[in-house]
Length: 86
Image (cartoon, rainbow, N blue to C red):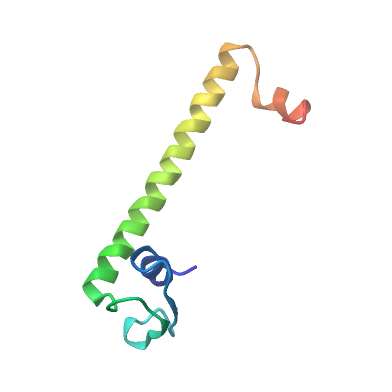
């Protein structure tokens, strides 16, 4: 899903819409409760979506590193778990 689509869904979860070439000016609202978000609101939401993706990736990397550290403390490696099918 494009950044524009993710931002719109973040702002208007129940909206149904289409657009062309990730261009705000081409958004066609099929279903929209309330007012359409402004370009500024969508641009801000796009930045938030990107920040959320970065935070999620960092959290996954941190969790993986913590799990590997715990395994190492138990004397296990990732390969050991893979051999056990885990």
